[in-house]
Image (tube, rainbow, N blue to C red):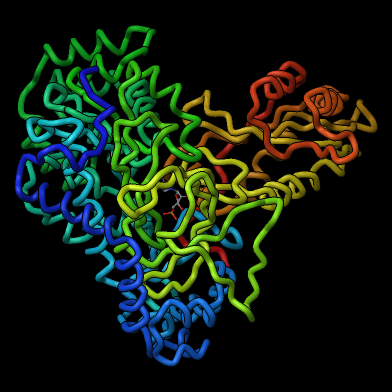
Length: 601
Ligand code: AMP
């Protein structure tokens, strides 16, 4: 691969056009003046929201300086502000968090009481997010030139949206973006031309959307210079889709006729202009590549001009790197940006670095950022009465870990995002962060995030079914199995069956799988039902005594016998192998759980 990942600083290389030069200049200015920009951002946010109920509740009295803010405003979690959020959802239009009207709710993949968190946002935040997007290509262009000479094959999707009782739309941030005028009427930009027609991206039916995007990607295969999805799991899902649908896709290409399962009339109209006439050569090529059992390097075989995979593989997505490497022959995987529903944070200034070397530079203009030192042995006490003095963006120290806290233009004040970051170095006076992990996430396959207490609750709900069979669960653990596409949750159960003649049947254990899935949070169930991005949950029953063996193994590696607790999630290969070697039966959820976009009350 003729891509140089060792350029010292992107800013040293001359940019090709004025727009890019301005963007790079902007990054330089922001990062050189990190602390000053942060001070101004806070003053601007507090000035804008001085008359809000929230700031008045804490007697900020119009102050907009850091000291007063830090001494009066508590550091909060979603649960702390949830009653106020509910008021907005119910229709209260008074300025609770923000003086600007709340335009919609962004639904995060993080959940509270089993439902997606609702993040109020304002119209102008869309421009701020757009600004961050506009910085990505100028940086990328420094490492991979000529991206204006072809197209990007990106698998992009919108998700279902709902209305709150008060009439505000609630949807994920990317759905909000793809449905916005900024996206739909974006001016032509040779550096951002996608193979996917907007009609396909905007189709809510995930099969029709994916099918059309894949078909267009195949039709324009020579022009594709980068292949991507938001997260790694999304790109692998697309590869799996190709595995399952290549015959039909090749059929459409060889006949020039669109698959009759594509019934969306906007897509049909658009495809009339793209799928113009039969192309038997291309169809034969696709058949030849796809009927080959070996799918190694399939991405570069089908899209030979691909220079990189544009997917995020940091954080929970790192588990997909080996598979992406297999399918792409080890193409670079730049993780371009770090963002959330609460706030878009920043970008990766060295996108060609290897995934484990990726650091994100938080752009100081995006919001006001503070950091809670993360030292598990010495946790910071966060009193509401005496708000703590947290570390400012410019003051974090290289090598230390922190939990991110944001204050946003939309009115979130000192809000704990839940991400743990480690400072790797500075670009000018702005720190760069390695994403370490999201707090409290035990299992994650796609957008789903399951924490320990959720897993405990779901397992307990399934226990109830075992009572009739005089059976109890001695011990359990879990594993995110990403060897299947889509990946799925595995729950290892060691059972104590008191009367083996009347123990639980396979059917009962399948029901247990389903009960667990029904008890999972709404993001998990949406991934299962609407997105097909998580496969059916599996229970693997292990031989009696297996968990004792796991304990022996842990102790042999230095765990304390007195303090030993069975891990609730395993990922360490020898332990997974040990568990797998003791499996006596495996059972899958027979049907998907229940899910609708409506929130459960
Ligand atoms: P959401 O609230 O659903 O928008 O998800 C935002 C969360 O996704 C962040 O708080 C992170 O935990 C995670 N995330 C976003 N971008 C990245 C990234 N580049 N690397 C790792 N995790 C990320």
